[in-house]
Length: 285
Ligand SMILES: NC(=O)C1=CN([C@@H]2O[C@H](COP(=O)(O)OP(=O)(O)OC[C@H]3O[C@@H](n4cnc5c(N)ncnc54)[C@H](OP(=O)(O)O)[C@@H]3O)[C@@H](O)[C@H]2O)C=CC1
Ligand SMILES: Cc1cn([C@H]2C[C@H](O)[C@@H](COP(=O)(O)OP(=O)(O)O[C@H]3O[C@@H](C)C(=O)[C@@H](O)[C@H]3O)O2)c(=O)[nH]c1=O
Image 1 (cartoon, rainbow, N blue to C red):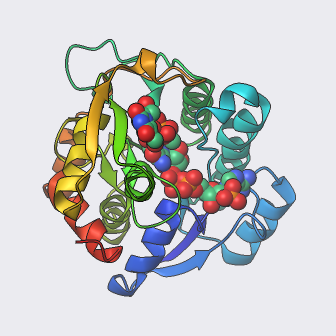
Image 2 (image 1 turned 180 degrees about the vertical axis):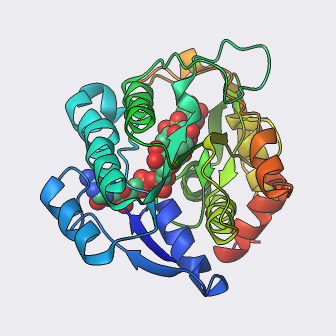
């Protein structure tokens, strides 16, 4: 089974690469932006023609939520137009596309966890660009998974967990927002889920929500990170209005992951356990 991975230097791409040895039946082609820019149709055609992949995992994305407010064209170019070019190649080569999307497609007004049936209403440029990418896939392809995930952390790249560890070395006190609630997701658990989906040859099931078990505010998530890391830092809960940011974020973006668990018949690990495994990889205990 040939699997083409785009954006392989990001958190998810590197997590997939780390797990590859455990999936010997999968023949991976990992590509970086330099060799396969998804906004470049010629590069995409060449890659699909050379590899004829059975699956394409699209880890390429524009993920700078605040910066996207200032450069919406770049965000849409990657998260919507590039995804459209990729979907066309998948259609031509009969490739199953596994694409990633975000909890930020929702406005946060739901009184209960968001299911795949709920209608998006993004608050930010990033959220709108990701929703546009989803809709392009839905209107182009029959064989796809769009996996919406949230609050991704890992030992790789830039993410909230690593930012907290870094800031704790520089400051004695930190202020973190406690009025945004979501489900943190360890990129390695997400990567494993995706590879198990492919290995099990599960028929494409459209939209699926995936996140680790446990609802947190960013403040609560920070508390848990420091508790597990054995780091003492004075944490102050603050409101989003007191943490100025360009992009508006949903106050509640908890994803309901029942469908994901039902598809593979497995249960997704809890956030606390995922933090421990991530800290072990970072050698922080
Ligand atoms: N991070 C998070 O908290 C969340 C992420 N997601 C989604 O999950 C997916 C994976 O996210 P994550 O791994 O964290 O993302 P990262 O930002 O860590 O990685 C994205 C990768 O895509 C690459 N890339 C950007 N533009 C292109 C392009 N035109 N062609 C090819 N590659 C490109 C980037 O390269 P470069 O560094 O050179 O720009 C980077 O290596 C994304 O779809 C994201 O929207 C969903 C919810 C939460
Ligand atoms: C660093 C820091 C952040 N914060 C707040 C700001 C923000 O509301 C929240 C998280 O900040 P970050 O910038 O790490 O993350 P953010 O860009 O909000 O993360 C989002 O990224 C995109 C890609 C997604 O798809 C989302 O699921 C989500 O993970 O924490 C503090 O309150 N104090 C701090 O010291």
